Length: 148
Image 1 (cartoon, rainbow, N blue to C red):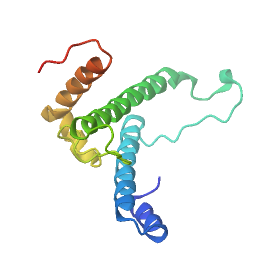
Image 2 (cartoon, helix red, strand yellow; image 1 turned 30 degrees about the vertical axis):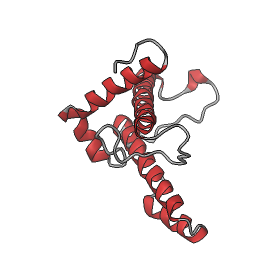
Image 3 (cartoon, rainbow, N blue to C red; image 1 turned 90 degrees about the vertical axis):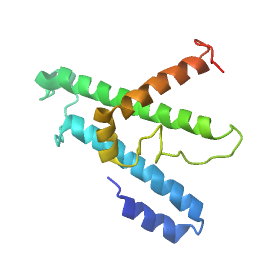
């Protein structure tokens, strides 16, 4: 995993553009949060199977649990990506030229901070984020009329 400090060090030596550094730093922090989500779901199990034939995989008995955990993680991270996109659409016009997502305040949750995301799961903020994502996705798909 690339650390935030490594990202800052690399970018600071190659680009004098502060906005670029801030954007990459935010991206790295968000990716670190995503990595922590996967680590939490899978633990520290560095399990992989080198065999070429599916039937010979030594983790066959754990297959269903691993698939379900991976599916859950994928859905959870997709919700976070959609929430980030929709929050940006709420704050900025489509032609504003944004280059980097804004992860520090996505419907009241700092997605660059795993502890804040974890807290949001119990204090109701994630539930509000999820409801907003579902509502916004429905509106964009034309499934629901917006009320003014």
